[in-house]
Length: 318
Image (cartoon, rainbow, N blue to C red; front, side, top):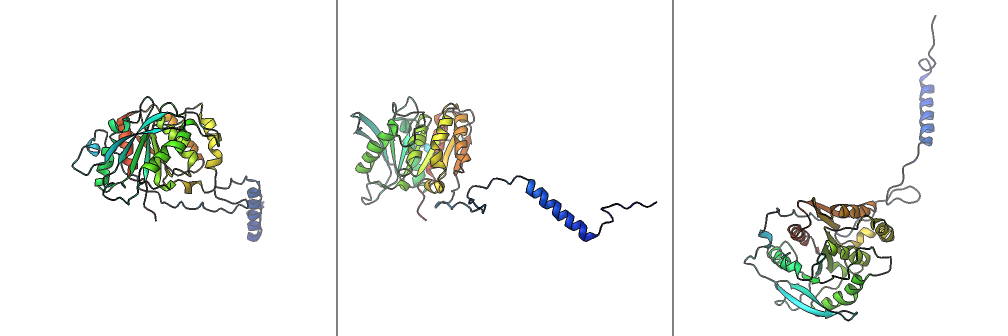
């Protein structure tokens, strides 16, 4: 007795038609993946616009025991000025200003400004006394690895907040920056006053200046650098919710002159806060640098982070 297998003995054309029909049914039943960022409502994917500045090559950190990058070398040196200014709140405060080599030699030259912020319990003197910011820039400028820049180091103790600001509401530190610090620097020094020529960086508590002031005022600051800092876990939901309208803007990456920079040491008390805060930027597709270094919450690292980032600040216009 012979048995006829219904599929084996079917004509080839009929088998092909059945396969196409089955594939169509399965495809119709499968859930369609979400459209990627940059896609239109009609499902046609469009890549996001390319930011004006390409991603730079981030220089390597110096070795932990390397002190040569802030040695007092026989190179042209900038000068440090200690200035006084009065805030709109009536307080007289001090600020350290680094003036790069060659500033006096070219009376028509104008310079970008790095606003460099200290940590908790410190003041305007620490980035020069412990961070050796002036020596780091002297050596980089002499080696033609960094653009000559002014560095403004204010005292933001007592006004910095670790609480994410409400949209449209400036905290006390932001108000002092916008009303007092930036106007003072621009009116007393030959600065370049466009946003592309202003960067803000800070360590630990100073990282909140970057996140609460710099990030919320990208019309004023073009580059953001966060050293060993990030919101505590209980503040992170508020930060993500309040910053979402900004980070969701269609061309937000075009407002970051350089990718936002986060760095922390592997034994840093701020490591997890930094990583979790950076995750908010990753969730919105924001260009960023993440640097994990050795060591912890200490000047050994912060000096290295400044050395690394100063080399990519203020790229020449293309």
